[in-house]
Amino acid sequence: MKFLLIGDIVGSGGVEYLKTHLNSIRNMNGIDFVVANAENSSNVGKGISKEAYETMYSCGVDIFTMGNHTYNNKDVYSLFDQDCPIIRPANLPSVNQGEGYITVDIFGTKITVINLMGRVFMNDLIDCPFKKADEIIEKVKDETDIILVDFHAEATSEKLAMGFYLDGRVSAVFGTHTHVQTADQRVLENGTAYITDLGMTGCKNSVLGVKKEIIIKKFLSGVNQYHSVDNDSISLNGAIVDIDQSTGKATNIELVNME
Ligand SMILES: [Fe+2]
Ligand SMILES: [Fe+2]
Image 1 (cartoon, helix red, strand yellow):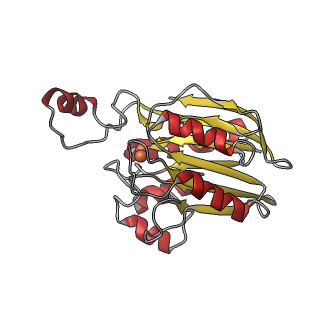
Image 2 (tube, rainbow, N blue to C red):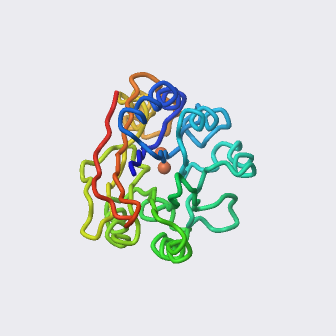
């Protein structure tokens, strides 16, 4: 089966890009299943709005993962209440609303998607993502065919460590959060597809999706500025992973970088 994994979708520009192009990307590449990180998909680039969710779901995203911006738009609470296929980092303490993994059945194949968040340079108050991964894999491994892990993290070391830690136990580990695509995609020794970061679906002439002038001003002044998303010149970053559903092993991973 072919999986399209899409890096952090930023703002209405990112959402509109999917609305216009996702169907043809799916058809041209024979994609069976799409996972997208939607933590920046609201108009202001933080959280997910009902409108953004509905647009992305109806144009072909199957599962939505989140990250440190999960709760920045209040619409997410009602989307969780309605059992929309949106997951939030599993290692956030359980007082927080939402599930950290989801299993769906596609053409008789069971696919589990797990969302985890890193602690290094991010949030050291959350639970250990490595132990949480063990816990979830132990729960689902006998009932599912394919496990995909979105590790939403800052540090390349933490992401690589997770890739090697889960190699052979899951079908893919892909990083999100930095909004910059890495070129280290490969299938690890024991059959897990890995990439440190998928990148973003947003304005390529921006700083991580935010208007570049704003971030340059922040660095020159040393003072935080009000952020505004740039919706021009959108490119889609991600990866396509081939997985043998009979073994759960990945056979190939390729970068996706489209304008
Ligand atoms: Fe992000
Ligand atoms: Fe993030």
